[in-house]
Length: 464
Ligand SMILES: [Zn+2]
Image 1 (cartoon, rainbow, N blue to C red):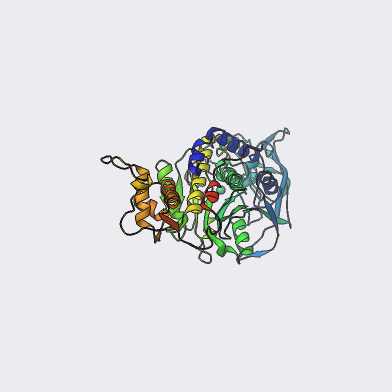
Image 2: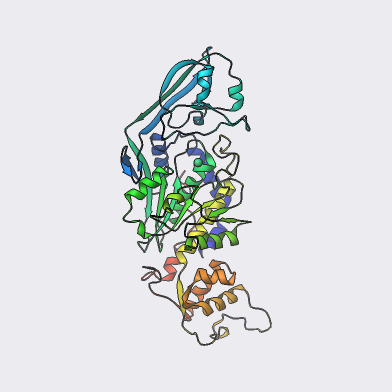
């Protein structure tokens, strides 16, 4: 059984429920770019996959940036004169602007207002705001909440700390046959926001579970990092070894009901760009392929000119393109089990293409070999051959040592998995042989059967 057959037989409803449950477990944690929220999040990811966490000291120089002070928060509120909390961090962690410095004061509404943030066009939603690089404090609340505040004196308290400490990130490294790597990266720095943050974390974690313990061609490195400063810090600390990264994918916004979007790497024609394009065209409805732009998620750092890594970004709805983005409406209802499961299926299928794409050589290149004699061609003439036979003909014709299976899949319009199966069949019949050392340390010493069976045992049972 092959990966895709296996995926087709998977219980996607149950996997989707598991993904959603994991996101729901992470949802209440008040994460930021540093602090105990991201540590607790990494600990929960580490219960599912082998995760090593790293702590980088405040003040460390990382390229043009400096690792910031560590922020933690216990409580925050705005209290009316009658003692009632009119804005309460305990009800929703979005109520406090992330990285707010501590404050405890009583002030009239007029003095408080410059510190309040709302979304007038969505008067019931709470915005998500941060002030990482300027020492400020602020509260986020629904516009209706703010309109209900009467002219009065309010007790304002933010019980936070902003002190020298650490920036924390997590890395899951899954060793494959080759030391060449596939990088999967997602940000883990947003508080209770489901699509932008938790959907990517959940899908990446389950992808890590799926790949764990399997025989893989590439080594896989999954990063769970604070956005921007985390990617910059990781790149600064791993500058010498990023040359191993052959392909990479940033995962985010994978749980909403929108169609898939893939943003290409800066290179624009990298293998990851072609693999994602191929998989989305064959396995999703109306996907959109976006050209690279230097704005978005951490692909910005991986694709900065000093690195120019082959890293794209997979999303459903695009950041900033849905009204719920960076608001309290990006909640657990906004992400759906089936969409999460489908995103995991797409990610796994892309990984399957990357891990199996290689070149072969036709051992019988002078005219077509007699396929009928080998039961590879319909014995009764007159009927058009089926897709598998077509795939065999395409693979034989283009396996000249110049074309990879993905090249052949693209040119023929036949899904990669069918092309790959045809190549296996032709190898078994002695008509095809893998080109050795195709693109590095490939599969020498790993029999095809073993390597491919790496994907045959399905998703691990939920550990929750
Ligand atoms: Zn965001």
